[in-house]
Amino acid sequence: MKKIIVIGSGFGGLSIAARLKSKGFDVKLLEKQADLGGRARTFIHNGYKYDAGPTVITAPYLIEELFAMNQEKLSDYVNLLPVKPWYRFLFDNGEYLDYGEKLGLTVKEIKSKYGYQNAVSYIKLLKHSKRIFNKAYTELSDQPFETIGSMLKHLPELIRIRFDRSVYQSVDKFIGNKNLNQALSMHPLLVGGNPYSTTSIYLLIQYLEWKWGVFYSEGGTGKIVDGLERILEKNSVDIKKNTEAKKIIYKKNRVVGVETDKEVLHCDGVVCNSDPTYTYEKLLGFKPKKVSNRFNLKHSMSLFVLYFSTKKIYKDVQHHTIIFSRRHHDLLNDIFNKKIFINDPSLYLHRPGATDPSMIQNNNDTFYVLAPVPNNLGNVNWSERAEEFSNIIIKTLQEKIMPELSENIVDSFYITPDYFEHELNTYAGSGFGIQPVFTQSAYFRYGNKSLETGGLYFVGASTHPGAGIPGVLSTSKVTEKLILRDYGNN
Ligand SMILES: Cc1cc2nc3c(=O)[nH]c(=O)nc-3n(C[C@H](O)[C@H](O)[C@H](O)COP(=O)(O)OP(=O)(O)OC[C@H]3O[C@@H](n4cnc5c(N)ncnc54)[C@H](O)[C@@H]3O)c2cc1C
Image 1 (tube, helix red, strand yellow):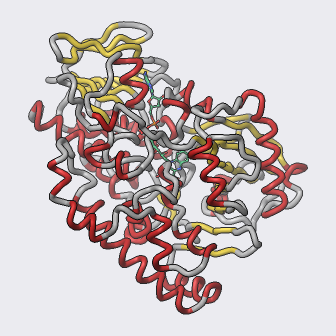
Image 2 (cartoon, protein in one colour; image 1 turned 30 degrees about the vertical axis):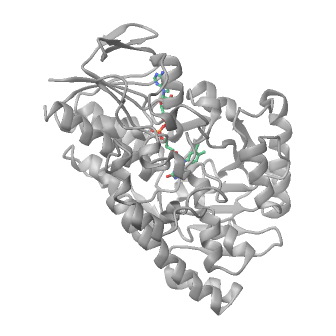
Image 3 (tube, helix red, strand yellow; image 1 turned 60 degrees about the vertical axis):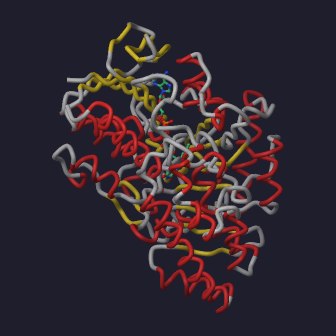
């Protein structure tokens, strides 16, 4: 039986462990933290439970597959609740738009707020998104790209769907209203991209949401992580928490083991769910062979996330509210390019109690609010500025959507880009790995298999196809294919 070590227990690590175990491999899972899930872990603070990261669950079939291949049913572990509406978009002029759940209602909402022509254009945009989805998701998201040649045959369709345009530019071709355009081109931000520079291929997310819906995992995203942990344990995956890989050991150009902070472990192959830029630099000690992975890599923005509970129940606040800053375009430029401290953030507010009454805890409402901020390649000193930024966020929420917020907070804490960099070992504290621009997609993204040494594979947000739970779960489908090709079924 071949021994595989998986480094990291984000959705990438958990899913590749579940896949390989179901194929008979002897799997060990190493996690630096005391709990599993990576970005998707659960924080407990003063008795309150908070989702640390992902809460928008899309393409649930990808999670169901992991349970089914281990002779289990997702529904025995997790109850997925439909979110209604998926998002409320709140604009600087006080206007808002409720989006998602029922297509008819969304079109009606667009028509009533932005007129008949924009409603018709939205349907056309969705058809365009479906065409992109059919190519880029259905055909390509679970296929390896090991050579540039493997991309070339898809080029004619990619040219037809205008991959050279940004998401924002593509939406702008259809939609004739600035606020609506901002809302409909926000999806790249969910996977670490700037809508003004992310290739329009990522418009596929819009159709993906309509195809399978948007859900919340009852009791928190941690329930999915716990479910996966339980099936891995049942199937005798050796899970080692509080264990940090320090070095990947290779001999004669082949991986033979991993040195952790406690011991040396031998194996026949390693799958890294740790961030690849960090992994090459710190665990491997050499540079990637692929040119697109060596120079000028663009890492995603980072996030400042404030977790809080309030004694007041904000029943008029929807589950997911996206609050746009007045200067959306310039703000994103400050975050992604200039990498400077910002004081007028756009915000995403998560109120799980709107969908799941069990998340109203101790009769208090629980929330998180996240703000995209520059990654640590800028020079913001978060240990000095975090408190100031937290106050800016509270003031913004209070003015725009949550009256008397500051006097109602009963619990709060935050994470800054330093958390992503130092706790999760992510290069420069980026929130989503490398950005989803065309020059970092498919073959140009970090490969699922190392070109430098045998027995070394990658999963997770910076690998093909990319970030977000569906993307990350697809990375492990690609990597599983490569491992089965190299080792055969065990
Ligand atoms: C705040 C936030 C909100 C988000 N919201 C959504 C959402 O609503 N929907 C959605 O689909 N996506 C969302 N995302 C994106 C999604 O969460 C991520 O793309 C995905 O969870 C990343 O998974 P991963 O497997 O790539 O890596 P990670 O979750 O980063 O896991 C990597 C793991 O490796 C461990 N590790 C690193 N180095 C070592 C080492 N040397 N030894 C041992 N362990 C190591 C880390 O501790 C970590 O646990 C969100 C992300 C964030 C940050």
